[in-house]
Image (cartoon, rainbow, N blue to C red):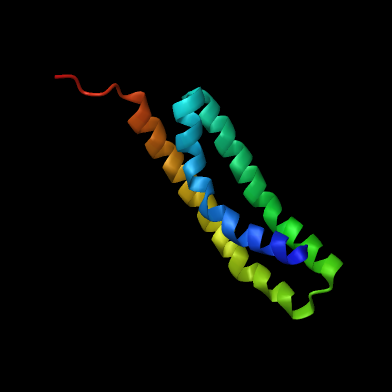
Length: 98
């Protein structure tokens, strides 16, 4: 079970930059910013979740993995916010007409 959660913590941040686009298309730009806030909050909680999993599983030397993963999570926060800004600009403009 802890292997699944660790892989999840490794792979999920790659999908977070898509969230603003999906939410903005479906529910609008205002709700997009709320979803970005939830994504940033989730990425902030990930190191604590990883530490808890590692402490419960007594992973020992595997705990050193938190340093590169924290960099990945931080990069995912930045890319998600940049993606949200681009989505807000692109989706706010009406499509050019003929």
